[in-house]
Image (cartoon, rainbow, N blue to C red):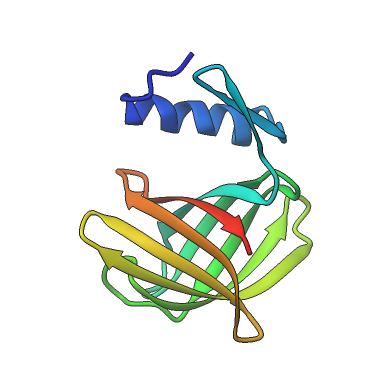
Length: 138
């Protein structure tokens, strides 16, 4: 059981479930109520070695886990417009998207684009490890 007020504990729980055990949960129990979990995911963006780049690790309820590489963003912070390529665990290209990250106080709002149409939305916050984001596909 994870304390809902323990952000670090929740992050560790999320990593353990999605990244280490490679689980693809389809439902979530919150205070004895079950919620469907389709078309949602979590992604951790870390600054890349090259300025304006991000490295991604993701876990998605329908697509499993994988990685990504984003280019074209700001050389400082996470805000900016990127072109990102996502790969599955075997390195196969899964998707190419436009990604826009905007800072709003202590949080970040994200939008993914496919052929200029919004294909996903997310919200996140900066941690010691990077930008942690929950998202859903539109």
